[in-house]
Image 1 (spheres, rainbow, N blue to C red):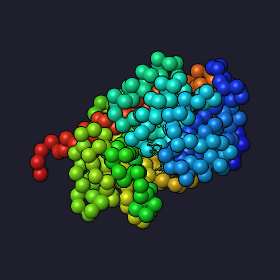
Image 2: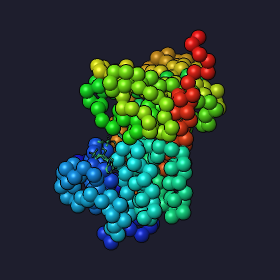
Image 3: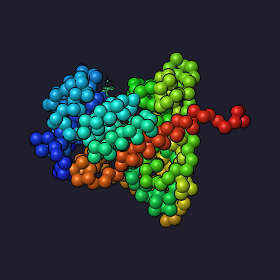
Image 4: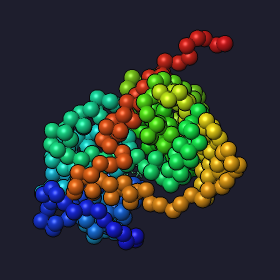
Length: 354
Ligand SMILES: NC(=O)c1ccc[n+]([C@@H]2O[C@H](COP(=O)([O-])OP(=O)(O)OC[C@H]3O[C@@H](n4cnc5c(N)ncnc54)[C@H](OP(=O)(O)O)[C@@H]3O)[C@@H](O)[C@H]2O)c1
């Protein structure tokens, strides 16, 4: 377990212990990761794990010496809970987030904040009305390689074309589950935008968005990609490829490619063609390659813990009202971008076969 500094020193009333009491909803991979970070953080205290899966919830609660509950709504309303971390699948982020905020608790939600812009707007309204902090775990822009790339791209005059390919190796074997079910995790473009936030963050307004998704059905047939809202109505898939193209007000383009369900190694990475050079990164490499007016360099990717950083930022925002690198409005913008990309993907090509 990592021991580290914690920024929280509460300017708001907190439970009797003087520590920010936290409930985690969900008991899967991110619940465990967030619980570890909370345990390493001196300013907050995990109080309860609430989940529908009593086996994993009990095991996680036992590991951290806290209570577990089947009743998430009762857990978030507890008097000793000041903040709620929602670590469930995307289809329930909005409902659990709203329950937390309505109960007067600060919210840390896994990404995305919601699956529809209406739900996202309602969450922001609730937070505003109750004076509460909303943080979404949009980790990709905080990871050290994207940060280093951002700095290098700026030094090279900005991006003309930023190409990001997202594909996890051996995803066919390892990736079964909610991520392959659009009614749970949203239209395939959702994760192109969410994981592609590293190319959008800090880049200014977007003036045009286009998208397309190819989905291969669980029964081997081509799955339907029309969906009335978010991912509802889409069948689970075996493999998908989603492409989202963005044009920024600064004139530059970005292409985000997201592939899920493919076996073998991946070709994930990033190539940014800049005004005065180029930045390249192969996912997982320990360096970023920069070609500029002075020649080529390999810059080492520094070590960092972005999950701990986003927790620290959340605690400092709750404790001191300190601005966060990803605001609630930024998180709502991601939901709006996902919605725009989904609508673009559903619109289909402008003309027939060419
Ligand atoms: N920030 C990051 O870097 C990062 C990385 C990975 C994932 N994520 C995000 O984190 C979220 C969770 O991902 P994960 O990998 O942790 O998934 P996971 O391992 O499948 O865990 C999800 C948990 O939520 C529970 N759950 C789902 N629906 C629920 C409901 N209606 N009521 C109560 N509990 C419910 C699941 O219970 P069951 O066991 O019954 O299914 C499971 O315990 C996703 O939104 C994902 O996008 C973020």
